[in-house]
Every structure is written in structure tokens, then in C-alpha cells.
Length: 440
Ligand code: SAH
Ligand code: SF4
Ligand code: F3S
Image (cartoon, rainbow, N blue to C red; front, side, top):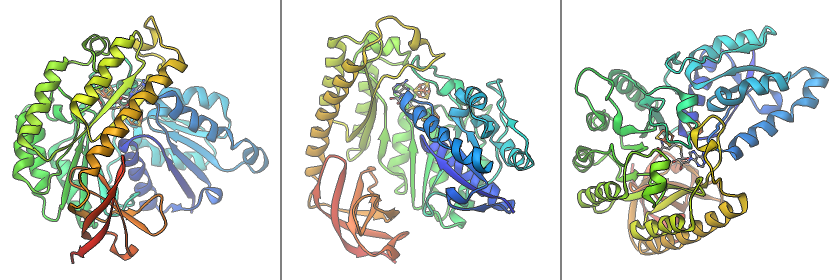
């Protein structure tokens, strides 16, 4: 029997893919062990920014000593990063024994058997439409009570800064029947919270012959018996449709947390980013959301230092944060990705300036989030206790329906139950409280 360890980086899509690989290996009789005991160490890597890639480059580099001494472990790289730089790394590191992109996940388990037989295996496929899915329900998950389910693969938006369309390939909706079957199997396995994943969930079903859209899927998933909470991400400002708001309003299981990435507060920059909306259209979407869902938790993504971003454009982004007062913003300094159009644009912003702008948006957003969260002190939220808190001895964690992290003291046996928590204090990224009541 062979043993493996798996290390997952990047977004929820990689977590989902990693959980599927783990599940299919365990199904085939492999044993999951600690990294220093494993025959095979599998990295699921992310390429969204230089920093994400760099971390995995250097970690994989560190196996040199063990490989030269013991010929073990065999290291594998899958996911977006494999598709982007796997071949380069393959040439560089003799201990890297398998590379596979997100579109050849289905070939990984057999590939790993070949790795154990001593082969070096390259499963990359350069055809962006090729797709070999791994047909398993991820029952051996990072989290027992909540699960991700990818509803559409790839992305056709080609924002000029973004690597995702190149590494994950063309947009393809999964059949609703397959998604619903998977959700049922996850619920049978004890899952209480489902998060539907797509780079642009609003275009779900656009490639079907029959009229079945994201709102239909959302409603069907919410109706699966035993599903307590349904979340979804990511929404795309100009594709978001109002029927989603109505479906959320009609189904108490669907959470009122929406991630609507704005990316920039300047129309000029949005055009250069190839985002297909203007700020006016963005504004209309936000208005429709807030009107239909007054309690919504609205989060966003923002890039600073995109090529050609002037001080004025940057000030427009700060103004957008002040205007929308998002609950949270995932901010990033623009990172050039080789092969994307923006990497070749003129007027790249230097590193020091990008980091100054990043600090400034982060400081502003922290202040806004702190104000929003402080106003929630005294409220009571019903949350699913989903894990121990990452930081903080003895603390448990959950999320409100509006997708805010809630931390509270409690016994770990409560993990997997719903509790009511009264909020006692707040900071910019979480709410702290005490349990008032435990549901059975
Ligand atoms: N599909 C989603 C986001 C996917 S990537 C969307 O359209 O918003 C997650 C976030 O990473 C993006 O929203 C963007 O803010 C950031 N990002 C992507 N490429 C980047 C790059 N080259 N440099 C900096 N941030 C980037
Ligand atoms: Fe990247 Fe744009 Fe697709 Fe999001 S919508 S994954 S930012 S190309
Ligand atoms: Fe990274 Fe791929 Fe997700 S590049 S952010 S893991 S889609």
C-alpha cells in the first residue's frame, strides 16, 4: 500500500480538486499520512499571483536533500500552477514526478500508480477544451461539515491581468443532475453547508440548450433535503441577474453573502482590464442587491497598481470603497502574469508604489469594516459551528449568513451543530461573542 500527503494552496476550486484527489486515492487503498512519512507528496498549486507561485516553488525546491539521500518522497504538482509552470519545474527538479493541470484531474490517480512504478508522468493537456474530470464525490474533505461544489469549470472572460482562463481553460457548466447528485451524496455524508463555485456563477447554464440558469440551480440545491446553508461565489457585476436576488429571498437556506468584485473604481482602468461593465452598471447591480436584500453582506475584490493606473484612478478606487462600504474587500497589488495581455502593457507601476497603494486601501477598508462590524455588537446570530478557530486557544468558529466570521469559546463537541451567538465585540475581520443556545 502506498501513502500520500496533500498540500493545497489557492482558492476554493483547488480545495475542491484536492479533496477529490484525496478521496479517490483513499478509495483505491492509498493511506493519507503526515508529509514526512509519505511516499508521495501532492501539491495543489495556485498561479494567481507571483507570490502564490513562489511559495510552492520554494517548498518543492526544499526536497533536494531528502531526494538525493533517500530517493523519497516523490513530489507531484497538480492544479493551476502545474498548468502554468509545471514543465519548467519538471526540468528543474528531478524529484518532481508528476504534473497535471486542473483539466486532467481524472488522470491523476492512475498517473500516481505509474509514479510509484518509477515513471515520470506529464499529464498536461494544451487543449483548453480538453477535460478529464475526476468522477468522485469528495467525502474525504478538508472540512467535514461544509463542502465546495464546482458548478462550472474554466472562464471565458479573459480579464487582461488574469491567468485563470489559460490554466483552467474554457468555460463549461457541469450538468445540473450531476451537481444535485453530488450535493445529495455530500449531505448523506454529513455536510450541512454547500458552497457553489464558479469563476462567474452568473453565466452558469449559458452553454446549455435548455433554459436553466444559475437561479434555477440555486433554488434546486437549496431544496435538497438536509442542506442547511447554501453559499456561492463568484458573481460577475454585469452578468448578475435579479432573479438570483428573488431566489435568495425565497429560500431561507441560501445565504445573503454576495462577492461582487469591482476590481477598480475607474472606468478607464476597468476597460483596460477587459471587465465588461462600467461603474454605472456596477452601481445598478449593487442597488438591485441592496434593495432586494437589505441585510446583505457584500464583499468585493480590488486590484491596485494595474498598468497605467494614475494617482487619480487610484483615488477613484478609494472613493468606490467609501461609497459602497463593503463588508470585506480582497485587495491585491497587481502581479504581472506571463502570457496575459496586461503583463505586456506600458506604464507598469513600480513595486514600492504598488505596495504604498495597497497599504492605503487596506487601511481605509479596515476602518470601514471595523465600523460596520462594531455596529453589530449586541446582535445574535445563528451559525453553524464549522471548526476550531485557526488562531485563539479554545475558540470555535462559524460564519453568519452574511458571511462574517464569528469566534466564540465552546467545547469542540459542538462542531457540526448550530448555535446562537451573541456578539460582544468586533474588529475589522471578525465578530467575537458567546453562545446563548445550542440547537440539537
Ligand atoms: N473570477 C473571479 C476572481 C478570480 S481570481 C472574478 O472575476 O472576480 C481572484 C482575485 O484575484 C480576482 O478577483 C483579482 O482581484 C485577483 N487577481 C487575479 N489576477 C491577479 C493579478 N494578476 N494580480 C493581482 N491580483 C489578481
Ligand atoms: Fe479571471 Fe476575470 Fe475569469 Fe475572474 S472573470 S477568473 S478575474 S478572467
Ligand atoms: Fe489560483 Fe487557480 Fe484558484 S490560479 S485562485 S487556484 S482558479
